[in-house]
Length: 438
Image 1 (tube, rainbow, N blue to C red):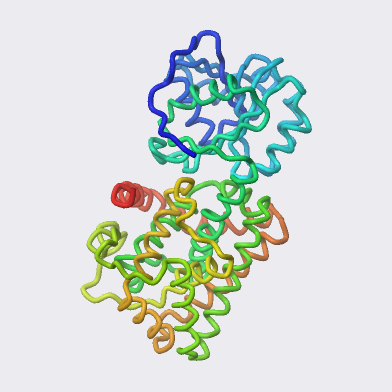
Image 2: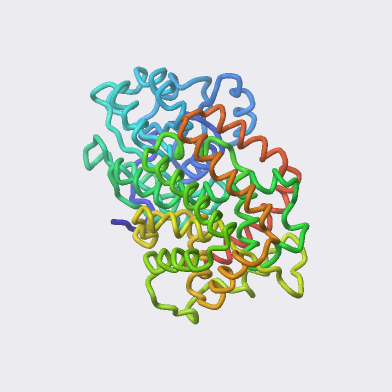
């Protein structure tokens, strides 16, 4: 299914040029890596960004900035559309007819159904389609990370060329169909994103920077905080396309909101027996009944190193509603997260790691259930978190990109002053933990 690509095969670089349409963070990353490997790159963004891009990439002999996608399409043998999913149809409709005869096209969107539909609708019949998706952000080292390659309408020779070009990323190549890609990315990303987006919304609603209180410091809390800030420091469309355009993602985000709501009601009602039975049934379905606590790779002494605040001598116990709900959601939907590890993002592996950490430690899980019933310390936070999860689900179900953007950027603005410090700590945390979890 996959292989780790290191060195390129010998190819006559002088005769092949790569086009990049869309110079956001990922487009720029691809431009730098592909050009550094010796390929000529023809790139463009919106015409009002033309002069700025020329200045930014001045001195890179292999990078040629053009005013628009017509010129890139005419001059390039392999063209990557690096634009958000919401805009892919319009951009392909505009530049597709200018595609060089016999060229190969692909895209980088997180939801392939609308992307493939746009290529089939607007590309000339002689154009081949090989699309891709790097399952990580632009600031994560691509080496060893999953890179999905989809041979949709192409000869093996053309597919091999795309592989050789993208081998400069030193990623793990994963071979899927468009439908397989969309289902797996929903399974590994949709609920993860919903959980962190909801946390940020809840903290903003309570007007708190969580690491400045003694309730959200150390251990699992560091993962929650650092990854939430990492998500909100990115651009909104990175998450909106997957959530709104992928039918599987919509279903999963809806179920996550239902799981949060139902578990919170059990907590409010003091229904300990029902809560314990539901949580442990879900845990057994997802993680099995083995404990193997001694084999866990995520431990407090590792997680504590990446705090934005001071780790207290005595931790305040938390009911971890967000973690209980994600396992409940997986159980309800019949998702086994380990099935898709080859296509997992760094954020998903972290979230799975801390969730496993909770459910594989029986004493900790029992304490969490007890706190959920007996301790009101986090009750107001849990209320806002429940509202947030339901709000994000409704936003996604309406399919409104503008509403999604408004919600996202409101919370983003609240946390923005803290992004530099959080990014530095978060990068260290991700590197360290991913080294330990593979």
